[in-house]
Every structure is written in C-alpha cells, then in structure tokens.
Image (cartoon, rainbow, N blue to C red; front, side, top):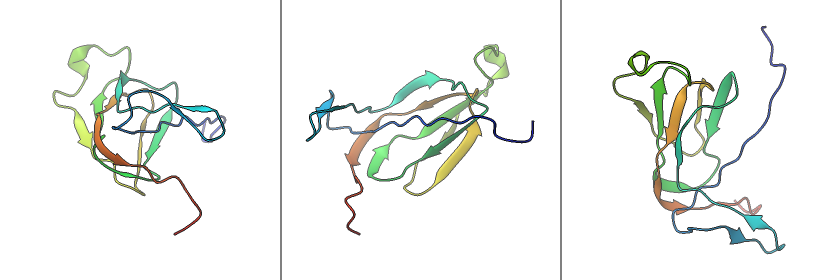
Length: 114
C-alpha cells in the first residue's frame, strides 16, 4: 500500500574502544558494536542515522539484491556510503548490506548541554 502500516526501531551503539558490554551507572547493561556483518532487515525500508559521535570507518555497504537473490544479481562492487553525523541514509530493508567496523569513536550521549 501507499502508507506505513508498521514501524520499529533498532538501535546500535558503536564504540571501537570497548570490546564487551559496559555497565551503566544505573546498573543496567549497555552493549556496543564495532560493525555489523552482511545482513538484511525484516523491513520494506531502513533508515540509518548517525545521531551523535565522530569516528573513522563505519561506512554502510550496499550489495544489491536481497536474501534470496543469486550472487550474479548483486552489484559487482558494493556501494559504499560514509556515515556522517546528522545525515540519514534510506535504503531497501531487504537489500543485503553491512556496516564496516569503526576505528575511532567519541560518543556523544545527549547531556542536555550544547
């Protein structure tokens, strides 16, 4: 149809300097990633947004096709899109894609101060 009938959010927190989950001040567990392996999302569209932080790496690679497409239906070279703070990347959720590892990351967790 022509409308959004369902939505959900999946949040990934990247941090290249932490290998394991980090315990928060509240005693909860916060896990970090340095990249995401090739996968597809169970969605019509996916919106990737860097809402904070600066890093090297972490580019989004789009391979074309989908989870059922034969290899020859995919791009011969992946489309690589760099993530920049404040910029959104919209792509087909079922398209095979990956997030390359980050190498430097300075988290900016909204402190309320500009």
